[in-house]
Image (cartoon, rainbow, N blue to C red; front, top):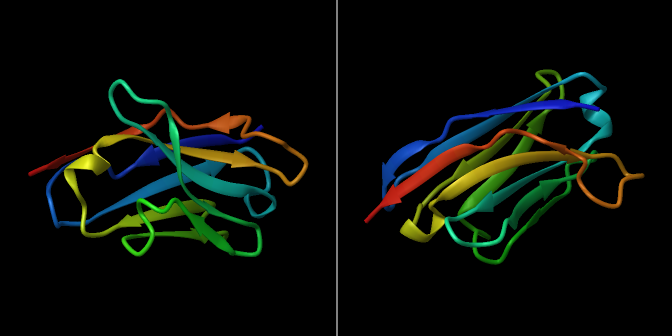
Amino acid sequence: QVQLVESGGGLVQAGNSLRLSCAASGRTFSNYRMAWFRQAPGKEREFVAMITTSASTFYADSVKGRFTISRDNARNTVYLQMNSLKPEDTAVYYCAAKTTYDSQYPNWGQGTQVTVSS
C-alpha cells in the first residue's frame, strides 16, 4: 500500500490557476501509475488525468489543454497544474495510485477541495 496526501486546493476566480500536489509514502513511488480524479456535488467521481511510470500522460477531454499532470520521483510527489479554471471545475480532487498489476486504483488520498467562482 501507498499513502497519499493531497494539498493545494482552495478558492479561486474563474480564469485563474491552482497547482495541486499529492505526496506519496510507503512504497516505491516510481513503480506507481498516478492519477487525479474529481467529484463534484451530486455527481459521480470522474477521471481527470493520469501519468504512467514512464511519464506518459492522459487527460479527460474536459481538461485537455488546461491541466497538466507531472511527477517528481525524487520527491515522491505528483502534481496537477490547473490553468484557465472554470466554475465547472469545482470539485473535491483526489489523488490515486496503482501498479501495472492493479485493474483499478486501490490507493486513494483524502481529497482536496477546489472551488472556482464566476
